[in-house]
Image (cartoon, rainbow, N blue to C red):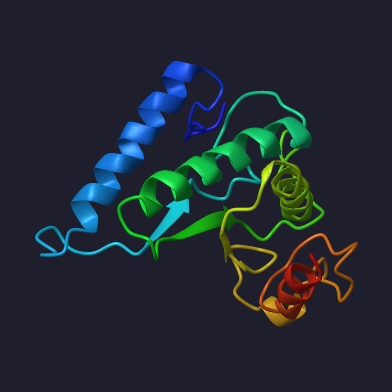
Amino acid sequence: RGLISQFNAVTDKGVEYYKAFIAFLADRYTREDMKYGRVVGMIVANEVNSGSVWCNCGEKTCEEFSSQYSKIVRLTYQVAASFYKNVRVYVSLDHFWTGSFSSRDYGAKYILENMNTEYLREGQVPWNVAHHPYPESLAFPDFWNDKTATDDVETTKRITFKNLELLAEFLYKK
């Protein structure tokens, strides 16, 4: 089981609770008087491609997970933008690209491809990427020695600081 659960976008009740949660945050932190501070961006969950640790929603295919997560990103934007029209919504991804932390997780590349397909079918919403380009080994920061961060965006297992330009290459093609 993951340490942090995914938001419920499957049931009507879950969707209503999530919308109320985002409305509370957006209303409180986008006030004109900035009484509670100012938020201009919302990161939706954490490292969603590694659901065995973060953003766990049970056993799902990448397509099923991506569809549910796309809905949550859409809801976040729609609700938050009703309070602050310039809100930025971010998709949080770790350094696994075509590889994954475990067999229960997904490569970030596949989530982004599935989200793009979902938004082409259901209608676009503005969203951004919050990528965590950790080195191959979290114990050693020598990213220039990463072996699984190769120079091919279609096959590299990880995107780290060694090959970070691949993320921009991928996003600009989609």
